[in-house]
Length: 577
Image 1: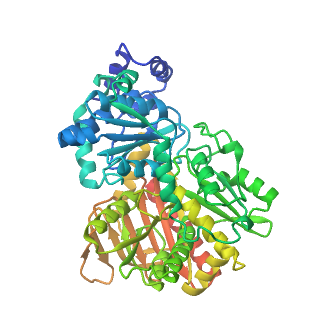
Image 2 (image 1 turned 45 degrees about the horizontal axis):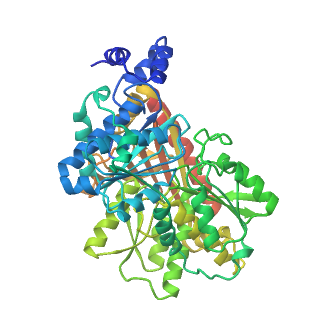
Image 3 (image 1 turned 135 degrees about the vertical axis):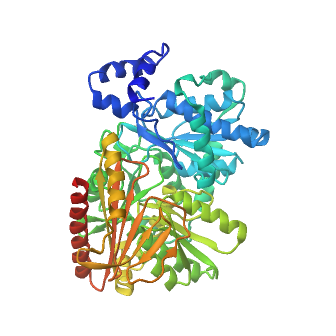
């Protein structure tokens, strides 16, 4: 079916929601807009689906949510009556249509005879992950688009271990979703009736309490002296984490912990922000203003679904934003020191990070006697490793993280957890303040000890059908016409995760990569730097990750800027070719 046929099918659907019918009418004069909305089905991938909200098969709306939910329901039914009785937990964040999409999903599951548990108000992604395990549910879903702009929403799927579905399970679910076929033909369930029948159970406070008790166990020094001397400003960026963090930090005894009240209430319009992304300086604008007024030591922001964290540290009269890699390095240093000092450092302790995350974390972990393992980008792969090592006891999980501001300290959740991280970062800052140090001082000490590891990220946005084709063409181009150098530095080896091979430029025999297939290319340079190219799985972007190491700050900064500028320029030329 071409996109025009799909458009006609929707136009002819008599019971189409009035809001979507009106949008279709408005789109009728814009052929490009219609094509993008209907040229394909919204992709249900290995992590679920994410897209712009609106009319169309390539959009997040009631019908695409029903279709996805019917596919997941068919997967659960195929697993048998026990899986159906264990059921599925659904949480949602502050985004547009999140409550409505949640009710549609829950109604679809319940109508299929699957027990559904639904949070009565916004909750974080890590709490959903925890809840799947706490309720012994068979699966979980969180309705969120993380840090995307307001016009987006999404649907992430979790397995019974509380982690996002592993590749094998995800492929099976994808097949079931594809078999559903016509999204307009999926029957709606009656939410209120299904609640009355008990097939949908509304959950909340009891699970909040169980989760908070476990988060409190992240502390190494619950009775740390001088907590009141550390001043912190926190913002959930209009997301789901505000009330949870407020209660947690009160319980933990951090009395000088304040909040950006204008951003505390969940609001999917994100009215005070250009972007609800803790990676961006703009997300800290109000926190910085408040921090300067109160002379706060630390600023912390969390993204809308409460799984990622940004940190800024006071330096003089200004604030310096830490990168995701830098926060991860500081946390590894702090957590492993605490384990060693208390005699709790396991002989088989392991830190897990992604292939695009800084090598500084590996160096710090090894310095303290822990091993490190790389996995593909995506926290599901960290969750998968936690499950594996819990079963085999080969390694003991110590910490998991990725450069995109996601961290996990204790594995009662199996996805990155901003709530745990807020408490851990605050405790680390209070601990080091007693020694007369800021977190920036700690980072500088790490650089002096191990070398100046600097990283950069370039994201190139290519929207719509043309953009998707353009990104695919670029990846094909650089595979067919391989690079031999980057910014004048020779490439020593290339890792192609689609071909699952490592190729050495000096003629050594190729090696097989043991990680799963992924459309990722990584170039290791002769001076120890590396560049990784990866299309985003959740946004219409292609990303260039760059990492360098030098003996001085100046050497690393210069090298990073040279590689970033010249590599981006070279890729732009290939886009135009």
